[in-house]
Image (cartoon, rainbow, N blue to C red):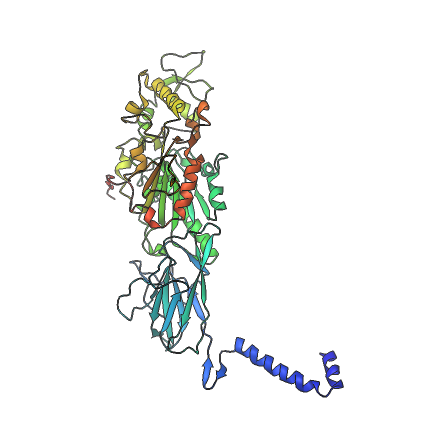
Length: 531
């Protein structure tokens, strides 16, 4: 400043020029910062503040509806966005005396692909879903007029290059164009994904070197959390095994869901639901959680915590091989260390000691006498307690045929040993089927499909990447790596190491609800025990 003063003092024309420039600059700054600036005769521009709020859970009533009250709690979270679950709403709050128009930029009113807008308090009758809405002002308890609109996200976003996309909402007063409102940018995020493992598995199963399913989803910009009930992974899936939390798997799933949603909330992202990808018994665990008393609550608008459920190789109606396995648990056999298990029921060879079948499995960290295997027998008490699950669902089905023949014969030979029946037929006697190849060597196709229509796209199908609705089946798929014979290693894939299944899950997570069935486990007994 001292140098400028000296310069001004040397030229009597400079001060006038500098003064005029300063006045012009001051006027320009005022236009950007002041609340009222003259822009023409008798016209005043008033930039308005628009506040975006998350109503969850303080403004949700016991029926899951938004409370129609403009006197909002002062401590509502101001989010940067929400998730594409069709449920997790946001509220716009604008102090203004006249009605305002809210519009999703780039959408015509009938295009709902980026969400819908509605008034918090209906004043013009029942409104149809729209992406452009006129909202009236309402007085608060202190006499201020506010205009409040609600944004409801779509049920999905097809965004493969980032974890979210930006939605812009414009706001204007159609009767007073001199009043300006800043556009509101909403981050629309993928719902968090919760992975639920199965019997004898742990959460690290999703990180197996052959697949690393978890990393695949993370690389595709999904936020992933794994449920882990590994310490109790041989226990029953019965949804009422424990009166307090259902069962260990359900409790782990509940915790994983809450953790995933809390992580979003910490980053100022509204979220009420998650997508679940479940393998094997994990699908039954997820279904059992839906039957828990805390599943529907105001924190999820009474819509439940699961946005969509994708099951992979899940025994929705039973795992038939669990019957002979459980029934022979107390029988005595010889076992050899290589391969991992070989049973000789008619005498002990190689001078090895005899061991009960349940002990052999326990030594392999796959117990068969802790409730889980018994529960998987079709018609068990655990299955009688499962209901049809009214959640948007998709079933991924696998079949060992036609190339997994060695793996099938290996498993068939194993059951011939433990049943002491040299003519035991895996399909006929094990899976109660009518033809070879109608199972993934643990669960038959009907059980995996959960009552949903299944299509097996042929390898020559040019549209094989376009998944059919409800359910899809893949050939040369085996339930888990342990069941693959050495000679089949390059011919078949385990379910969570299959590129087809991985791509299918990614496609489903980016699909809208039209790909999903409205429920799964159709025809389940639903014999809920009395309290």
